[in-house]
Length: 425
Image 1 (spheres, rainbow, N blue to C red):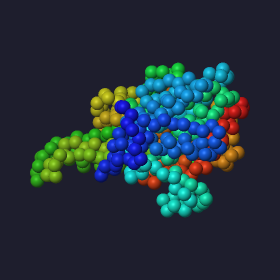
Image 2: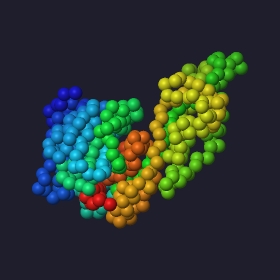
Image 3: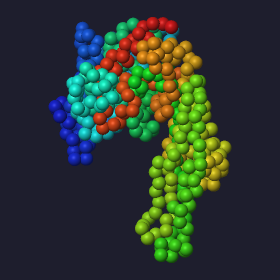
Image 4: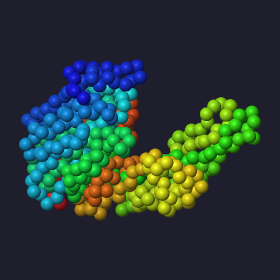
């Protein structure tokens, strides 16, 4: 996609979509005043990133700006695969730390272009106004998830010219969509050597606390079959929707576990999230599908999670079509897999994890917690790299229409990371 000239406003259509070619930030070039105070420099960089529209599948302009910015830093080797940019130091330290953040956002909901809200603005959420009464707040799509953390990582990439560790910065695309498009996944498959290291930090919003590991997830359709007939002569058919009652009963009877892994509690979940069936209001349905999502703790492998749902050695796999569960929760039903991602252990026994966790506790009072959702720490875990989630912003505000973050969150994240990266432990 060719960069377009900058404009001052986003062109938003009646359905709230944005015409990317008319968006402020297309063809952007980022800069930073190295002489400015840290807060001012961080805020400026954050503003520039926020102004660059980057809904998934339209993050090319932001990737260009990130690559250009990093290429100007003489201490970094910069490489790019698609719209993922990787920048590394080569100081010959004993250990390497990876700092990663995705650059895409979910679609806008009347929350682009972004803006700074001064103290007292009615758009500032009550809990943020109370906790930060005299502070300005960045409002807009991507503020917490996760352009604030991206700004911190870019700032460190430009200003941290020495560290106790070699550093690799990873800014990747397509995190907010299906796993097959994920930029970090593509780099892991094509250039795994680019992202090898001893410890990784994903800048997902955590309110500057550590959230270790992540639950795994599998999504699948549980299918019932019937025989179509006119609803006036229902006895001539078999109602597939009625048969789905047994699926719902099994889901209701399932008691999700809380599993302690390396001292952190992971809450599992098994839920129907979609249901579909029927071809007409006067037709007995011949098929019904209940879409189920199983979120499993990192004490289980992907295959162990499948075994619990479908029985051991069921052979049920992605892109393999429907097959019958031979055991597990859904024994006897046809299953069609839709998506799967492994869990990641928190790695709390790793020395680098422990030292960062200790510093975070000293600075914030926050003890490490389990990450209950799925994040790309799992990709690093598959590469044998211990990884945690640590970033600016309240995770509960991610994807909300009033996504926002107080300015001091960026300072806190930057202070903690710089202190930790400069000091060998």
